[in-house]
View 1 (cartoon, one colour):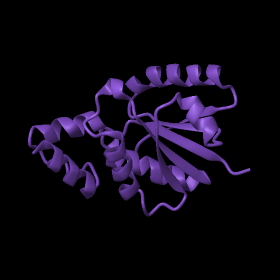
View 2 (tube, one colour; view 1 turned 135 degrees about the vertical axis):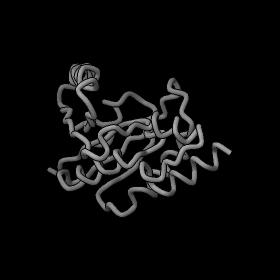
View 3 (cartoon, helix red, strand yellow; view 1 turned 120 degrees about the horizontal axis):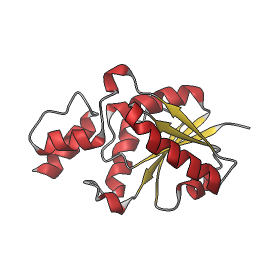
Length: 159
């Protein structure tokens, strides 16, 4: 039975840290599904369709990676995709407490789904979508933090 992992997030926008983690996960799992959460409570800069489209472009060279938008409960999405692993990234120790809380709740909701954590590459350990948006919104150069298609979309939306 192939091991399928879901890497969920808002990805508003997808950073090089996200894509690096997905590339590494694609070498570990038979299939990685990037689940892009609609998550309107976060008031994303990009709508779900835009985030899915950018992620598909960024990840197009990874044949075992699928990008899907979703708006339901994560464990329901994971079950619907016949996955048994939720993949999460841990940038810093400060992320751990919140991520443990999420993992515990997800396990309580569906005990057949495991959460696994990956750490970012050292050059991406400080990256977050929030920081990238903040820099871009204030006219800063974000080309070394995100894929060129994301740079273009940020520039288009900020103008």
